[in-house]
Length: 234
Image 1 (spheres, helix red, strand yellow):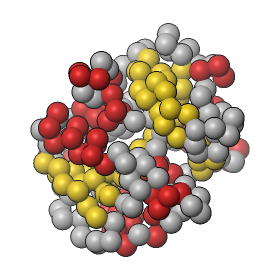
Image 2 (image 1 turned 180 degrees about the vertical axis):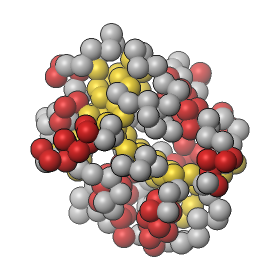
Image 3 (image 1 turned 120 degrees about the vertical axis):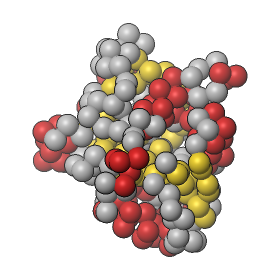
Image 4 (image 1 turned 90 degrees about the horizontal axis):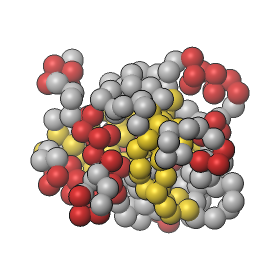
């Protein structure tokens, strides 16, 4: 499987993701510049974290119109895999590839710390190998990460098993105290109805190298690698 990491002006986690995929997981990985439109045969596209275009209008709102996003949208609508992390998640909601929106954190402050994630659904490529009883320690770093959706959208997400991750405490308990940004129903990550587009606010690529003292993020990224050649080209 070939991975493509999209680089926007202001992306700052593209190197982290590239390093993790290329050097830790030994995957065929390239960088895709936002002004290009050719996905260069990539099977799995990743929109990394950062501050695309400085987030001057609204997080992800300008990046959504970068030339490469037309190709990313076509790729997703054709069944291709796309993962947006943090700013990338924001771009996916702005592109309407994922439902809901990411609003300013409830405390109106930028939050950068380790949090814990609970896997809600294993019915996705991103979560298929995860342990639903384990609390994964993953860093966050955002000012607009509060997931919000209408009651109708929330019901649709729940009915279709699209909620992948929720914020929890170290013991795996869901509570408002474990919710770092005020996200609706503690939601930290979702997928689309077709289960090929994923978005999450926490950064698994920042918890992948043993030198950092935490490799919980590898569990998430390694789940993707269970995809078979038949799945990719089906």
